Image: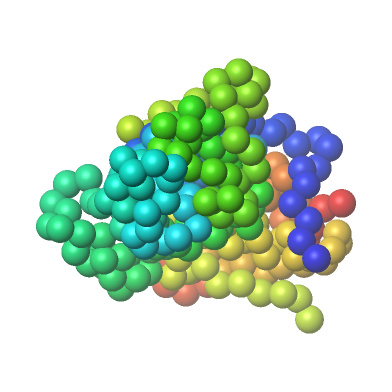
Length: 168
Length: 75
């Protein structure tokens, strides 16, 4: 049994991260902050928008997700979490694999491990309704941990009294 | 027999993550022995455990910069 609820006397602090980028290295940064903060008792909310939605796709590789030809072409080109490019020196997609190898060698958590840790620690995942609409993506296209499809008011409401970070 | 976790080979944020998840699996009053390195883990693991209502029963250095901390899970 896992028990992640906060004790009553805890001074809970809140962190909201807007995950705008779908770059591998920036996703690592977002999930490192998210899991690290959750581990020291912060309440963490991740709001995924635009390219960041690629991280959430159930289909980890390339798949023509989306409604309409153009959206499907985008879906194919963008791909899922296994296709996230490095923001610099991507070399046609080989670099993220090399980087993951390096992270394993150096005993640093990989992106998959950081995402899993965030899930295990109860970090909430929400997806931006508007960018999903543009890309023709549905909630079913995403991993089950995505709690809701939301807009700006819900994001602000969740982020009340929170530190807000925008990762672009 | 107390549960034990060694995070001396881990780096940020997994040092904190693994301790938090290990504590989450325990019942209140049960203890967790943590082996960690001095520096960031030693400064922050006991502190955040205390903040979360857990108790530090023992804390002391072993060899090679490794420290042993025994935590008791709070209610």
